[in-house]
Image (cartoon, one colour):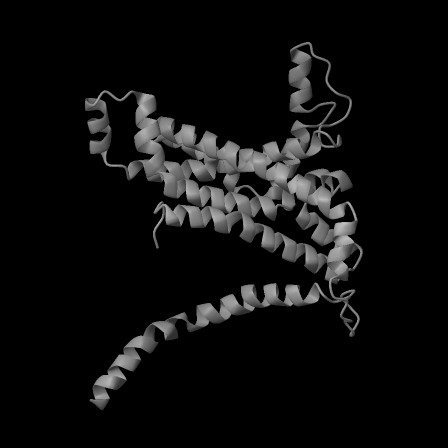
Length: 297
């Protein structure tokens, strides 16, 4: 009886032994920074002093009493409204057109996915030249159409700067949902399309009642990652707009508070607000899909 008991214990512990190192790395690199940031958000610290006095909710009160957080949240919401649905729709439509493995389709899929492998620095330089007000591509195009171009760059005008940068983000992100939807479309049994065609379904009806429900797992992945990236967007906005006050997003606010004003407690408070925002946005969405059996674990 004892050897059998030992064998059962060994069988149960073996998977955890394999998971020990990954779990330790996850706890150290993910869980610990989150917990430490939450603790630091209740302290006053400049990043250098040995003392870290407890100030309670003073850092949060400061954020909510100024316009800094409101402007950053508004810009993050605007970015999300542009960055999540537009690439999703474009990627889905492109996947419908380019799903077959012909040489032309493979070439076009590669072209649309190419921006995904470019660094944000390279994209920022490229598109800064596109938006350049005197010799940029848009300026030259407007002149060719006999339209007077603007004297200021779209990146330096508060009313257009964030939208102009979001266009770059959309251009960069289209390839991801495209690849997801192409893979999802190939998993749909051909018999379903044949049955729908026999029943007199039009092309739009097949897309509405066959394709869209059966690629929902790809939509779930694209929306979830897009929401997370929208909340934590930093690189493009910082590199193309220079962290201009009116175009600040929450990640730039974290950078400004931490490395410009050396207010680590306030910076940690913004980080925690970002984390809570992601949880509030994603948990209901995931829960609805789970309860509707749209996804299974």
